[in-house]
Structure formats: C-alpha cells, structure tokens
Amino acid sequence: MSYASDVKKELTGLLVHDGNAKAELSALMRMNGVSTLGFDQTVAVKTENAAIARRIYTLLTQNYVGVDVEVTVADHNYLSQHKSYGVLLKSNVDAVLDDLGVDPFGLHPEIPARILNQKDKRRSFLRGAFLAAGSVNSPEKANYHLEIFTTHEELAEELLQMMKEFDLPAKIIERAGGFIVYIKRAEKIVDFLVVIGATQTMLRFEDIRMMRDMRNSVNRMMNAEMANMQKTADAANKQVQQILFIANAIGDLDLLPKKLRDIAKARLEQPDASLSELGDSLEISKSGANHRMRKLKALEQMIKDDVPYDLTKL
Image 1 (tube, rainbow, N blue to C red):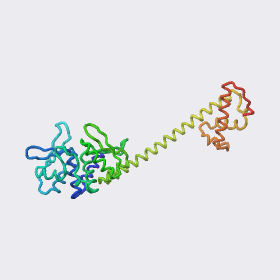
Image 2: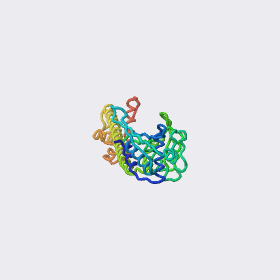
Image 3: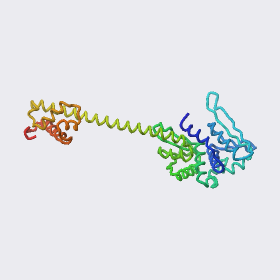
Image 4: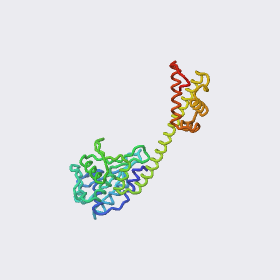
C-alpha cells in the first residue's frame, strides 16, 4: 500500500458530525464527480478506493435519514485486478445535492458560503477534497509533493485560498485537462496533514523525513570530508613532486636554507600528511608551513624558467 493510501485510510476512519461531515461530503461528491442516471434522477459517485466509497455511503446515511443509498462494484476489465466503486443515491436526490451545494451538471462549481462558514468546516472540506482527488509522495522519495486535482479553475482557487488560511503556501498549475493545487515544502505538507486530521501518518512522514534528512546530512559530511582528503592528498603529492624536482636540479636538499630544508624533508617523510600535521611535526603553524611550501614552489618555477636564483636568499 502506498503512503498516500495510508493517509486516506486514516482519514476515512475519522469521526465527523454535523456541519463538518457535510462539508467533507460536499467535497467528496463534488471532487469525485457526480452524475445523474435515468429518469428517476439517481445520482452516482464513482471512485477506485473502496474506503472512500464506504466513507461517502456512511456520511450520506448518517446525515440524511431515510435516504436510499447503494454501493456497487465493477471490474475495469477481466485482465485487471482494479475495481471501481459507485455510490448511488436513489432518493431525496435534489434535497441532498442542494443541501451540499453540489451541482450534478458541474455548471456551478462555486461552493455555497454555508458549507465553509466555519474554520473546522474548511478543514473538513480540504479533507474531503484530498480524499477524493489528492495524492502525496512518500517521504522516502527524492521529492516532496502533495497535490489535489480538479477540472474547475474556480474550485482550484477556492482550495488555494483555504490552504492559505492555514498558512499553507500552495500553488496552482494547469495540466491534463484540469488544475492541480500543490505543495512542495516538506514541513508544509506535514502542516496540511495536521489540518485535515491525518495525525498518525503525519508522524510517520516526519519520522521518515528526519531519518532521510539525517542520512543526507551524514552523506554530505562524508562527501565533503572525502573531497577534502582527496584535495589534501593531491596537494601533498604535488609538493612531493616539486621537492624531488628541486633535489634533482640542485643536487642535494641540504643546500637549501634550514627552514626550507626541514619542510622539504618532512614532506618527503610524510607524503600523506596535511599542512597542519606537517607544521605540528616541525613545531610551526599551518600558515608557516604553507609559507615555506610557497617558497619551494617559487624555486621550482625559477628553475623551470631558467631564472637565476640564490639559495642563500630564499
């Protein structure tokens, strides 16, 4: 089961009542797509998630006494294991849809004010919208992403405004015949899950995210350390080659002034040491060791360029 499925499973188990239940139900029916069937005005809501179908059935029967509701199951095709679920509202259709502010023809996507006139109702509407048409990447994946899809731009804008009320910096992008309201920042995805009531899966998201971020941090530190070690090794090898070149050119390192002679011999004896370690062995600072190495490098260049030099004045 995917992480998004786990989130939806938790959400379909939440208890909601009164106006909050109707706000969620309004979003569930609106976002899943309501269609009228036949002359008796039967209304069908279709979903591929059995738990969401049960949720719609439960909310309808709990909030509208005496309504006739039926859940149907259909296979996509004989080769597929996927099923689709339909929730059929067979009675009191006009009254229920009017109460929920849902237009079965999709001509009026705006949400009536009474559905969203309290903060908890707006939380519930966001929960229903996510259940019906939302998804969220697992925190184990490379990119954090949560989205809700709708075919109506006005509804996308409404969702965006609701998210902003809860300090959720969502954005809208037009794609594949509709509009996607999405959040990219991990900490804001966590906040969204809290808003809609997915507490347990939010804690799991945080645990995985923290472990992943810690691993990434450790990997970055290790990579940086390895890069520094490689840089130190490359510099040390270059210094060894410079000193060997100088020794071959002047005949004997003992001809160098004492300070340069000492650092040159120390480098040959400790080819893998850092400048700090080399300085410690000579009881001088890292900057002092670096200064002497620069003098040896300058001497190497003078020899290569056939420039006159005086070893006693180095």
